[in-house]
Length: 247
View 1 (cartoon, rainbow, N blue to C red):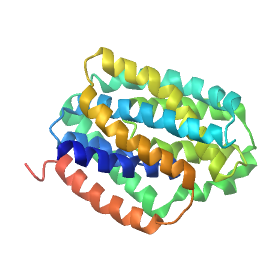
View 2: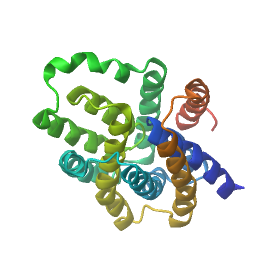
View 3: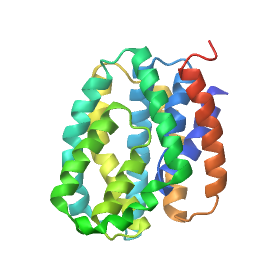
């Protein structure tokens, strides 16, 4: 039943990761719910993300929505940030990490509800395709992703909306590629420190990859309200769990 639940949650998480972002807001707390220590849950989630991103990126590439050169350019500063962030994450105490995750969940819940990243396109006066600005911002995106990962998709969409004129499909294809590249060193750091449950990670990856494949094929907005409701309820329960309301 645990593995079946992981697959089901993984499908949903992989789908919304590709459609917009926030899948780890479900999978990371779910792994903690299942009894994994916070650092192990964090590392295990990276394995599923790595495989999910590989499937999503390959599917986008097969459909022509791919810009490898620019994706790598933005991913490189994110890699440096992710290396620093991952080393910070593996040294955080479980109580500190859980409280940090609870704060992030609440912040991301507000983003899901109010969607400020959709309004960021009004700030184009900064300049389109601003590579230098993007490099700086993506370093901090990688830093955040290295520490906690959950909700990083919203940050990437915001940054790409700020510095490019790309449509959502192309932004999502770049987002998946950037996540794939910076997750590789982040996962290796967690794996080297022994903070990965490979069985649960691979089972979760089956669900994530299936969801990523479906999401990258559909790329539509249907079901947004249902997703918001589900995420809102799930996040509230998970925040209460992380803050010790359930003992």
